Image 1 (cartoon, rainbow, N blue to C red):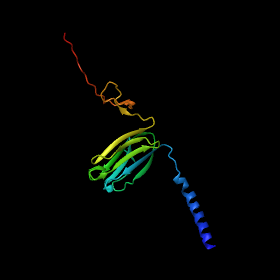
Image 2 (cartoon, helix red, strand yellow):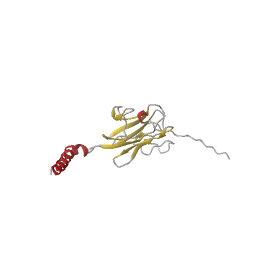
Image 3 (cartoon, helix red, strand yellow):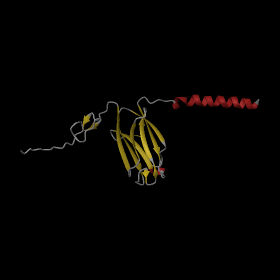
Image 4 (cartoon, rainbow, N blue to C red):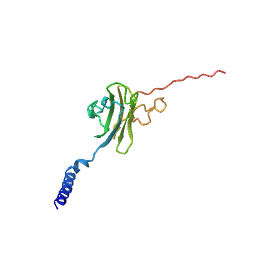
Length: 165
């Protein structure tokens, strides 16, 4: 009879713990949820990362030596920069293991990925109505079809032809 009481109380305690922690466990991101997934090389303590907003403020991150295999952040509309760092300067791949990183949105779209870099690598990404800077001139060799605002970087080649006859 005592064992039945322990089992019953244990189950009640588990449900109490579940209901107490459920709001935090099921908290939803009301903005743009991103997930950073890391596959470490042989030296995970060298890896760090940060996400900064357009003003350079860090909104999420893990200093070198504290990164985990997965991290989730909730970001407001705007443009951000993901910066991956490696303390030794050999990146996450390929000299000392096959490490990599992937940043995805809530729908699974890849916003940034890599691993083969030196001391750091940065990738910009945006959410919402934030302008995407780039070359908007379709005749330029560096045309960016996703750009919504021209940043003055368009490169065009002028060619002169003459005919002789």
